[in-house]
Length: 394
Image 1: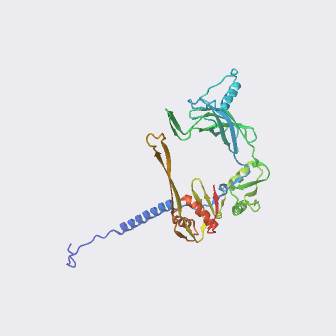
Image 2: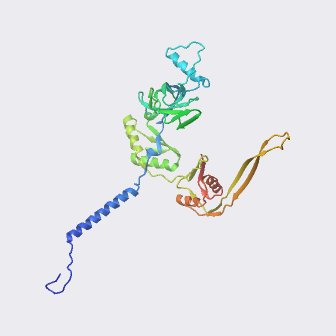
Image 3: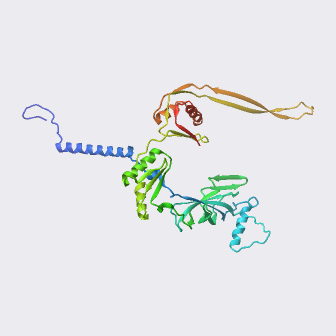
């Protein structure tokens, strides 16, 4: 365009409105703030202390184990073989007698749809008569499957011999199977099942929660630092002298005598936050599966490790010895065995000092050993004093 004032020809640029610039800048800043907030929410773990309920429990408030012997009926020909499991027949005869059915003397029952089972359950704390609990049902004889069976009323007894629940209902078996012509296919386990809410509580177990003016908290694992932290947290919140650590596991606490006040008092205690000290260095090994788990306190001192492998290979090839014609000899098959031993030299690997769990894992991965090999390597490093951790083999 031509400027009339200067006579010079130049291109006139369009200048954006100041308000539009400020609006766009504010929009960009707002979008950036939203993105930062989303990323912070996704990748930031909220820091929170551990609550007392996660490391301790009130002494005496616990579950009780129940067990009973019963019969599962209604099976589709997959029950016990009574010739090999006579107690199944005895149990059925006893049940029939209680129901008014008397069998003639000398009667031999050939059962296929009945299985003898053991019923187990866990009676939770404060369970009252009329409440329902889950039960597990497991075969004790040679039943092929409990699928589709019904558990007949079975009394469940505690350690004192008293009946605390009655179990009955249809089993849920998480599996299936089929067999024909000598072939068999099985999916999951068919000799055990579960009955959700299959037992009705008949008797409550008294608890010492409301007895006396004190109660005790038991830590899940003995640790003096944790016991002190729990006692300090209670004293700060409920007043000095309320709690006292007796040892590394038990904390004695003064509590209200009124039942409602004591429940509220315990509710407050369970939700108090405590800061846990670092646990003792420990390595847990499973020798059967080769799994190794170590906590964050495991450290490694400088050391050198050489690890090689020794393999023995045995091959057996059958050889046929054929006699000469008309010699009267017999054809004999013999085995020719070849044994080979190979040893792979292990290079000496320098293991640097590691003060963090990531450093220890990185150093162990440098060996290139399998989990089974690490079982022996870690034990040898412990014996050499290069590994500061307790080793537990399960």
